[in-house]
Amino acid sequence: MKIAVIGSTHAGTAAVTNMANMYPEAQITVYERNDNVSFLSCGLALYVGGVVEDPQGLFYSSPEELQKLGVTIRMQHDVKDIDAEAKTIYAENLVTGEHLTDSYDKLVITTGSWPVTPPIEGIALENILLAKNYNQANTIIERAEHAEKVTVVGAGYIGVELVEAFEKAGKEVTLIDGADRILNKYLDEAFTSIVEEDFENRGITLAMNETVQRFEGSGGQVGRVITNSGSYETDLVIMCVGFRPNTNLVRGIVDTLDNGAIIVNEYMQTSHPDIFAAGDCCAVTYNPTGKHAYIPLATNAVRMGTLAARNIMEPVMPHGGTQGTSGLHIYDYNMASTGLTETSAQLLDAHVKSFTIEDTHRPAFMPTAEHVKLKVSIDPETRKILGAQVLSKADVTQSINTLSVCIQAGMTIDQLAYVDFFFQPHFNQPWNFLNKAGLEAQQDYNRTPALV
Image 1 (cartoon, rainbow, N blue to C red):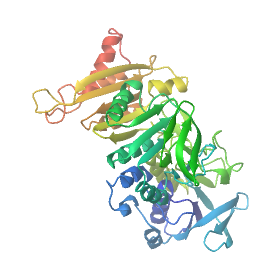
Image 2: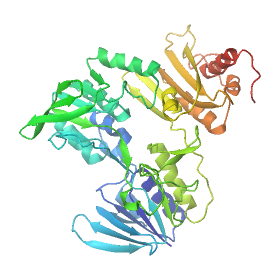
Image 3: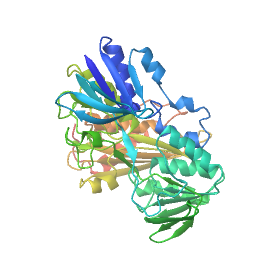
Image 4: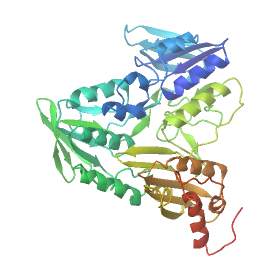
């Protein structure tokens, strides 16, 4: 059995490691266009900010480790074409320029994603950088050393993490986004407004509801960002406006969403029976809606890569879907979300009813008790839990993992009211704030009979 794998970051490394252990007789060949594998891009801002001092900790495998498993690694090889009927791939050695042809019995596509680069006037100027891989992270660190004013375009997770890193390094930081608030894909306004106020108190300039029109500079170097309503001097720009699936290679070969994300079944199989796919190049079943969605997260990628390995010989382990669960630590705040927010529900034309709990994470008689804001969204007809958000200076983010399980299991808000959680004053209250969300919902429904 010959298995070819294209790409080796989260999903690819998980797939290769598991296949090598599960099928020692298989001949596995990996094609990777970069000079490294398995970089944890979610740690990029921590590396840029100096929290992670040894970047090797951001790699959870290496070409040498994969080779020890008996895998053939072709680093800095770019696959140019696939003949799905002949089961053949064509690749170029990016170092020597040599072209080669290889055959396969099974093919695993784990080509990941790539940062969106809008066609903005002046974007080719020096010091306008992307933030995705290890080499880009090193370039950011090198250029930031000599920059006083830094502009981050894009207020998602990576964008706000980089803002924190640059502000802590003493830079004058501007954050630009076309949306009306930061982190709008993950949290509703009642949560993001708290973080925005914290940013502004720290001297960070927030340019929300602004779209970059052009970059200006002299001597080939960026010096100013021009938006539809403002102008910002800068020495360095980091583009963090989102990611697109890196799937040009398989367009027309397998079925995709309109944005190019590969559609896979629950066994990670594409529309072509001998081609599997996993990770940021794929769409995944989004449990709150039951539809395919593009949710590029490392957690999704490693799960999908592992399942691709388990199912490549025969379908044995289905994927359970995702809630898009994620978390973030910014300055003093811990925040996390899962499933639908009110904002994302509106974008998806879904209707939710929400309940907000404000409490302390443990009893007031303890020396400290931090404020907790929790919001749970449900289907108003079935009362099933569809999403949740939490924010606190205490780390209560594991509560969102609990609610992710609730969504995946199809639990109702009424059931949540009486779930058995432990109580210990160091950690929580006799009525856990998750229970209180369920109790609040029952009061709101004015004792309408619960769905069990």
